[in-house]
Image (cartoon, rainbow, N blue to C red; front, side):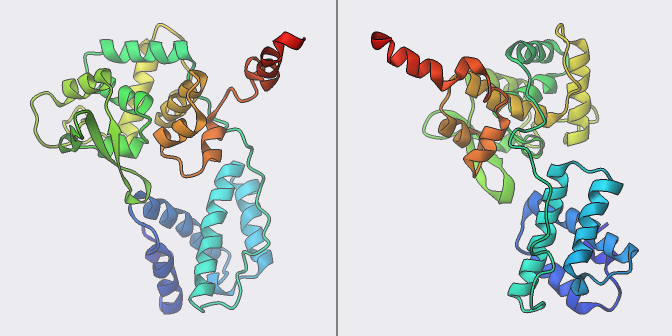
Length: 300
């Protein structure tokens, strides 16, 4: 279902306003934004409210509905409200509305720490071992792309054989990320071998395939990860693809990689996003007090 399917018939202004807002996005960002906007427009229709005639109190009701009726997490509510706020801001810019009804609407506080934790070092090694020993060559490639390259699941599933190449000598993987931004991700030898095993002698098509030899999607990837977790020698939590991206970030931070370097590797636009992934930020073993005491050891 698209946004246009939930809009009232004959409301040309609203249709144009939605198109103008969505035109600011491309790729998966557009798909996710359209999905969140469609939910809001559907809610307006169910409550017989005109999206372009909303008052601040009406938008507040939408927030309460997400929190109290649907029980969405604060991060989900905040993300969907960001879409609503952006939509009305575009309407003001385009002179469709004089002011935004989403101004001054209170959003839930989102915790600085991400609620999702990555795997521990031992758990990650166990998952890698289970994937490497699997008879399905795409299992190891999947875990390597998510956990050792830090790819998002849509980036891993969207990668094709022709995206593997060389740049000034080292092997790289061409990845199309958020906002259709292209990045060249270096391939460590172990990851390169995993991809070569998955690709075999193919010259075209997706790197990751499902059992029907079609391009793997996020749902198939989730099932593969949960199967691997089930045969692992170490007890693993209920797996989902993004957990390995968390593992990619937190393992590098635990290994002492500089935050800025981790941010670059993870392709985060804001370093605060990288910090949210760090499950060990409050670990007392890494408290600056120990560094200061060691530095001043001669005088204490």
